[in-house]
Image (cartoon, rainbow, N blue to C red; front, side):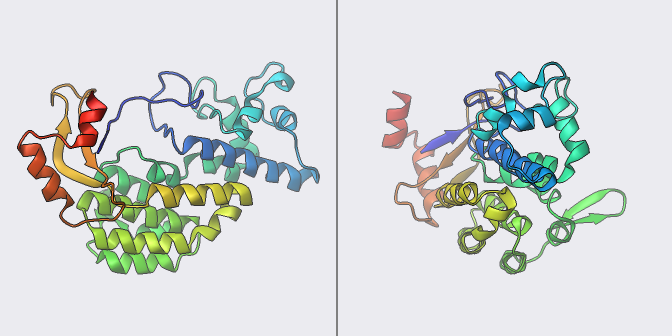
Length: 286
């Protein structure tokens, strides 16, 4: 069993210390490396030569002073950091990237990064990320109504998986991941299994989308491992005092068998209500 909270986390300088917002420790390295790979392709298409990190430092400096000595792009290449957002006080790199290569800059905010992360997501957050998908795809999942209202279409989930299977693109792949995240909240094993099967079939789109065959293969392996089995969530359960939001953690359970089980929630709730703690949780607390 594992409890996943919403506390701030960092990894090797990703996003900087004590920075919250939408940082995802497990997918941020992929996001940084994708930004580098796509920027390198853009540079090569324009000048006909493959850039070194120092070349991208000159083209898109993170600071206005002495860009040749800036090592941001070298750290991006290794997945060790992320640039500040364009609206941040130190967002010079993203500002210049948005002006010169907007399609490259857009990769920074792809919904796939938060959807694929192990970071907990509430239902409205998943639906909000669905709205960030390409227009034709997001409209099949979430509709806009008069008065700036939004509606998650009450369509059958199996039909939505079928629709997404025909969208052989990064957007279609992201939508399938979103459907899996939603299925975890609903404890809908059938939708999860069907969406995962289609996701695996669609992983070939990653090489072109991420700008690197090696990076695409690595992220494909990450997705298969991340969604190897459905996380079983106990609805309404949390650890920590409810008045202390920073300490409250949503209770989740991933069975060691590696296979989804329909009775997982009932089994765990039975133990939880009796005050018993599964062996692996007891060891973690000790």
